[in-house]
Image: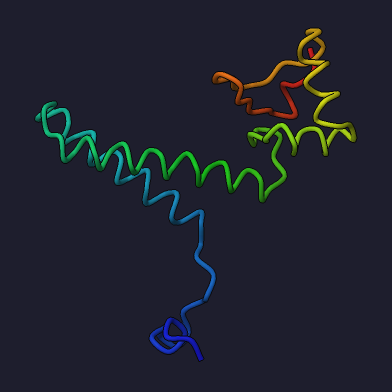
Length: 118
């Protein structure tokens, strides 16, 4: 038996409730915003705030993917698979203006199913 299973209290589920974790992250961000409002130069608070914000965004994306939500950001490969086409075809359609990524940073794209076709 693994160490984590031995130390787990009886009756505590193995699976973390991600919705509850998301709610706690929201509360943590609000507390950090209060700290930053009081002292905008607090670098420790900024570090914690940015880390919590990054985690919150990743968690929201993961929950959206689990729910098969159209708001989830997909990679180019995932989007091509969902559309039943190759990555090369998707990028060619993007170049011609037939599809548009939701997020673009250099050569990296993030796609949303609901926003892909215009």
